[in-house]
Image (tube, rainbow, N blue to C red; front, side, top):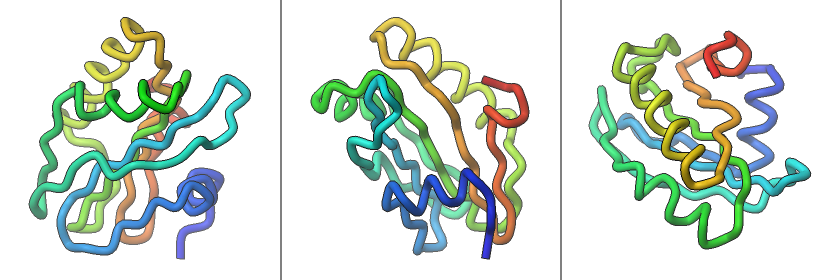
Length: 123
């Protein structure tokens, strides 16, 4: 069991990582940081999930989200961002800025730990 503000947030938003493949979720928030909903944006294999920025933001724009949090799991258990995770987080942040949807955090979920880009000062 993981106990942290990030874990509580994911649970409250209804984000579930059940399979042994990577999943990428987007949690939509309004300007007052109320959760509007969560959407499973993509699923990959045991080491990667590929999504286009359009997939990430399509639903956020439909529901009028002004802020998002993205979260994905590392099925192999280690919640340490890869260089690709860092690059994709930066790319999604830039696209969000262009669209007027702020990326607040990217949370990685491992077997027993979480990694928050926000808490580590990377967003």
